[in-house]
Image (cartoon, rainbow, N blue to C red; front, side, top):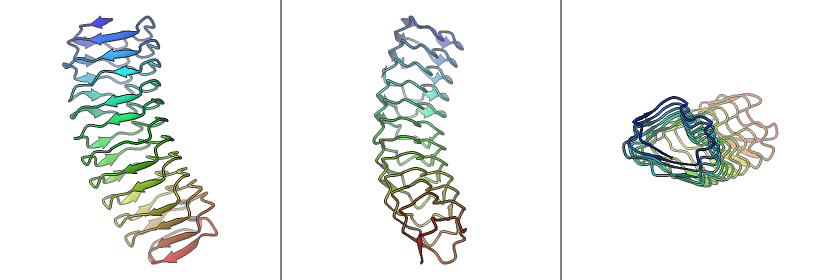
Length: 272
């Protein structure tokens, strides 16, 4: 089907299961839920005129596997492609902005090119992208939102940019293949559950700059054996490193405030 409407209204093709291939021409705005639950839609060609894709516009288009390149400057709404389980590759031009959960539960998504001028990765943008094994985060990114990469079970290494100032709660929760993570010195708080259940982590050196470790920050890291914290650390909240049965050694500043249940009971604490 070819659509030439400048604006595609709210839910106008929702649940249109006779729609299999879509070519958009002259379209500037795709409304909220416009193609939601079009289960047989397999491909979409976007026009250069496109400016915005509304909330849940293509949510649960479960056969959607091919997207043409999205033009620069497009605003992708919350959950726009959520649960599009067959999309394997996404190429995002510079100037594109993404809302919360834009590619949430795109389980086949394996390759992503992020805009090189992107400043923020919103909450749950790539959560449950089970085939995402690697991603390059541009140096322009200053914030990674809550749960942004949670349950990306194949993600094994990630280099966080030196510009990053906020690493959201549960950002890498359940990334069970994550073996290496480099946290920049510009991050001051490891928030609740940020690395929860990252069961492949063994050794971790937290960089200078981090002052606070919130509840559950490294809980469930079952293979974790050693953590070295920087002199800047001031507070370790209760159960910050809970259910880490193999943790043997922790190095922390003498003045850091911690609680009885901040660490497993048999952990050897070395003061620095």
